[in-house]
Length: 541
Image 1: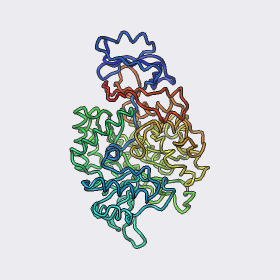
Image 2: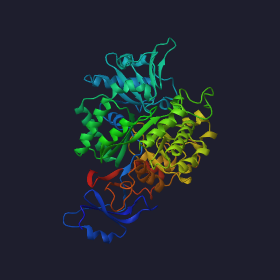
Image 3: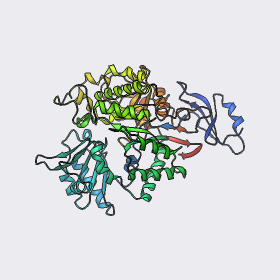
Image 4: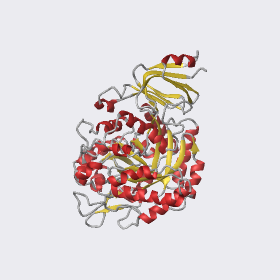
């Protein structure tokens, strides 16, 4: 049988073995026809029309599967419709960047920004609407924090979004000053939704252009599967957005497989979620389950701890948890009963324990349902809860690059002793749990290699130690498996994605170096030479 593509290399990592081998991958249509460990056997798959690539000592792996992203938030942040504030080191510097962008984009009805982060501002006071009003006096201005748990707005944006100091919210909060007036900050996704409805509102033609640009970027970084983890509600605005995505996916414009997770918290009726899962079920865009937020982030003291913050002993989490244990249990039980896997945002050990308790209750009520329930982020955990992941069949979905992102903040927030179990990758694998890795884009960029580097080396981008040296390192093989098979398992697609095996979908990437033979510090600089998705070459350097 002649293949359409044959990829040869002395370093093929199939995500099944622990070491790369010399051989080939043959692709026919959108499937892997053969994976061979004898280079000479490739000849039987090479015909007159077969495209043959020989990458010598470059590493060939399955397409990279990002376990946790925010598709539309990220696509907008990756577009030219936002000002990138990730490099800002102060409010003053961010304001200058915003002013410059606003002056260069007079046609934009709203000024959108993304990426400012308290840890990058040396823990300076949080910004207020006053500086943003001066920078953008004529249009609504919305500035998303990098962790997507705080939004900074000017007065026009607050008014356009309908915020008032005394508004009733299901969860989250609206910032007020000493006079009881809006200060320009809103915290946590439920409260931020009013602003996000404006921030992410684009005409269909712009939406499609933004997504096309984003798909090209994903292909160039070897990401062949990702997710929409924004927990979108069952409203017409989101339904229409999903219709646009479905149209693009079915037209072949999605070159990365998207798995969407819709709203979950404080619900026991999942009729709409099941309906959407049936309606949006194409191979490259599908509603896969439901997702919710149980706490915030430790940077603003909204992550739920089991004991008080070291630098704020008056709280274990401002406004956290975002639901009661009883309500959470009821929602998990109902979603699993409806056949929906549940994914819950839990930054800190208090929320992690709550989620585990809820998943345990679901097993008691629903029996062994076979669904892949997942806890997201798990930046800190109590050691007693680590074995429960395997016992309950819960996946640990984590993001390596979050470790250097926070600039050793956990040491301040929790103290060194409690940081023994920050980003406990090694402990999860040693306990037998399934580990899935991703980026949480746009919190960090969708380039997976800085995150792989962080899990292997536990270093900051400059090479210094990230956090405490707690021994929670991964091997290169473990990190790659968690970025392929682990995340494919989360999406319920490990039978067809995540490894180089005969019969699986032909998602393959080639890197410009062999990660198994280079210094760990060089991993973060890895580039992609070739991306094949569904049997098609979607990127070639």
